[in-house]
Image (cartoon, rainbow, N blue to C red; front, side, top):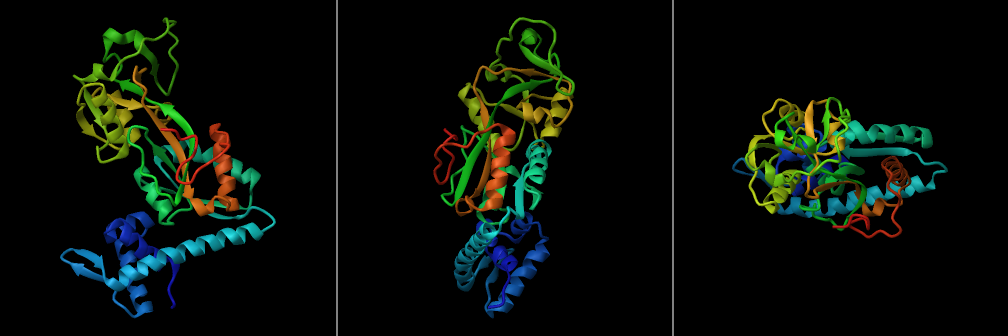
Length: 335
């Protein structure tokens, strides 16, 4: 039948995400564009694939059957791309990369410079997306690989069709308005404008506990996000429920609010580099981490362009390749 990969991908994403709007967000289309893809697919098959139920749409039996086969078709197509790449005498081709804001600002630029130098035949097309969406985007074939985050307290569910390789680990500290915890002034690891180091000559810093913030307002993402749930889990383990004064997802906005004195939040060094801020950063007695990971489909492990970019990312983050890796997760990504 005369259909396109874009049409099949729209149908597959609809089974994953449930609404036309969500599919549009995932694929970078407008909702009308997604509807057009599905309509064209119905014309190609001569069958009705969707039906309306109130304000929602759902797959017909024919739609569900085609969606199942469409996943296999798209996987076979991706495997064919990998096989063709391996026949070339040089590493060349186009990669679609999904990434979150911090990765876009700090991790991808140096990696792209190295790719241009080492593999000039590789073209990278990047796309900013919600960090919690990158796993589904890779699984659905929307992107070829993605940079994501994982939290030991609330690990991302593992899809056996994906490879998740840890690139680096970051430990969280507590960001508080300057002078907000005067009794603990000597616990300030840095009091920074644009990340300036503390040169006060104080003795080694003492650590502050999350429990010391029980009376303070917090700035956090929604608890529906993995990040929000990870912070909530850590606070509950410390024996209190954080008082969320401002529900904010954007890191730069969070730092601005802390600087303005309206609340506290947890931060990593990478997050602090997103916005020059004047605030106090206190070392936490609790160990709270996030893992920066690269995600790609298992069968693409030996695709030359994917392997090349993964190697560059490992090099740029200082992560050596593990001796042995397992499907679904990297050996280094211990929990």
